[in-house]
Image (cartoon, rainbow, N blue to C red; front, side):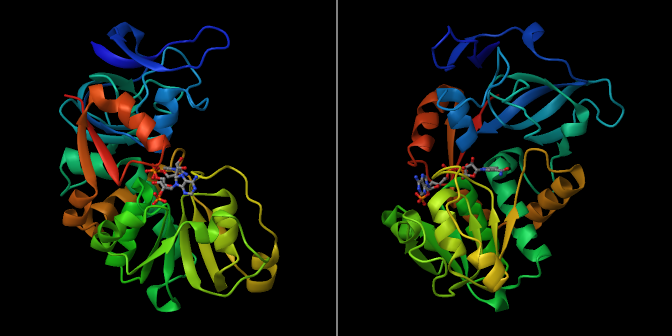
Length: 328
Ligand code: NDP
C-alpha cells in the first residue's frame, strides 16, 4: 500500500516523511486491523511530517494522529468487523503507526465508536483539535465557570483548536473574544461565533506588569509562552485558563501573582493520554453541541498527496480551521 512514511534518517539528517510502498507486515502489533477512511492535519502532524521537532520516536513511522476508519479484523470481542471508529492520540502517529496509510493496526482499547449523529468526515473535521477544544471547555466548566461570569478569550483563534473552541463556547452562551494574528480572518471568526477580535500582539510580548486589568473570566490558550503569561495577568478574580498548546513556545515566563493575588487557576489539558471515560464524554458532547454549519465553515478537505504541503503551512500558521484528509 502507498503511505506517507518517516524512515530512520541518516545521522544528523532531519526525519522527514516521504511517500513509499509500505507493507502490511511493517504495521505494528495490535488486536484490530482498520481500513482508514479519513485523517486530518494537526499542528503535531506538521511537526512529524516535516521533522521540525522530534515527534516521531520510532521508525519506520506512519504519521497521522487522527484516524477515522472501519474495522476489518478484530481479535478483541469489544470490537467487531464493520464497526466505524475514531482514534485520537495514544501515541498513534508518534510511537505507533498512524493514519496516513490505507490500513492501520491498533489496540481496541484506543478506539471510540463513531458517535451517533456524526458522519466519518465530520468526526475527522473535529479530530484531535476539536476533541481537545471540548476537553478545554469541560475543564473550565469543572472549575465552575459559566457564561455569566464574563467574557472568555480563545488564543490561536483561527487555528484548529481555536476555531472549534470558539464555536463550542459561543454555542454554550459565552461572550467569546478571538485572539488572532490574522485580522483578515475577522469575518471567519465572527461566523464561528466570536463577538470581538483581539490582536495577537496584545499578548505576544508577555505581560507588561505581573497583574494587568481584570478582563477575562476564562480563557482557552493554544499558544503558550509569553502569550499565556500575558493572558494570565488579565484573568479576573477566581477565573481560569485551560492551557493545551504551545504554538508560540513551550516556555511560560509568568509570575505567581495571578495565582496568589487573584486566585487564578491554570488548568492543564492533555488529549493524548486522556482516559476513555473523558473521551467518550467529550465525543458525545461534540456530536450534540457543535454546530454543523460552523464545523463545515472551518473545514477544508485534501487528499493524502497534499499532506506534506499542508504540514509546512500549519507550522507557518497559515492553515485556517481544520484540514480533513481523505484516505480511502
Ligand atoms: P493550528 O496551527 O491549527 O493553530 C495554532 C494557531 O496558533 C495558529 O493558527 C495561530 O492562530 C496561532 N499561532 C501560531 N504561531 C503563533 C505564534 N508564534 N504566536 C502566537 N500565535 C501563534 O494548531 P492546532 O489548533 O492543531 O493546535 C494548537 C496548539 O495546541 C498546538 O500547539 C498543538 O500542539 C496543541 N495541541 C495540544 C493538544 C493537547 O493534547 N494538549 C491537542 C491538540 C493540539 P492565529 O493565526 O489565529 O493567531
